[in-house]
Length: 291
Image 1 (cartoon, rainbow, N blue to C red):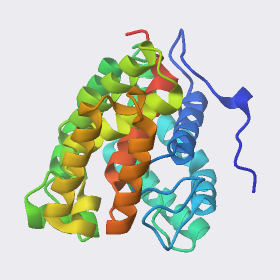
Image 2: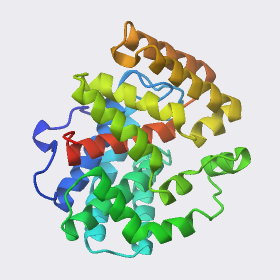
Image 3: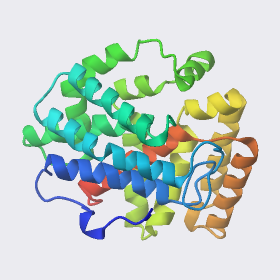
Image 4: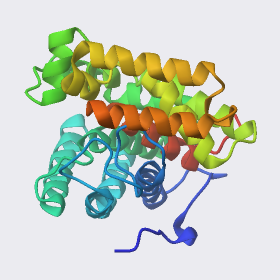
């Protein structure tokens, strides 16, 4: 299987509100951005499988190809101002296609939720005549589905991450969404955009963004695999990496590789941070970095 995607399909920013097709295409490519990045502590890339025995890069490629139409469909639902139940049904069907493509492996469940909601918000913003900007997308998400997301955040999750979040008193993915994705909008997107404007390479900018997210996110994937101490140790490792200058600092990428090896040894995998990084990459493709 080829690991390259056609450059002609890669949108970077739009002078007018992007179409649903462009919104969805950007989401698929953002998942590729995340997969292709290395080093990525404990996570799957084209270099290795990270802390995972049940999946590799080809599993992720099958998954994102299976999901490519979903992101267009949910953007269309957002443009139609569809109720949250319709978005949820679309996401459930997408998860089923993902599972079929991967043989039951959960590669992108978090991205189906997070990126799906963002694509819907972009579709709604297009319908509302709003430009594709982080602030307007966040506003569209809250305006159209904020109440439904708030209600959803009170559901009792039976998934491993939800159980870990509840056990350790962490903010779950559903609660993060109900708050309008504060780690995405207040940490990930500013870090990525600022890093690009500073002249960092795409790889360096994404590594710094991933570590910035890891430093603050209540990543229930880490808590599930390593307990609360595993999460706190991972957050401290991320803070230490950034304090020493991050990816652009002296020996920065080598230090990131060292953190990756440590995470693999401990079987830690910051899946929530990976989903947030993909969402930030999508935001860059939709909005550019002019702000």
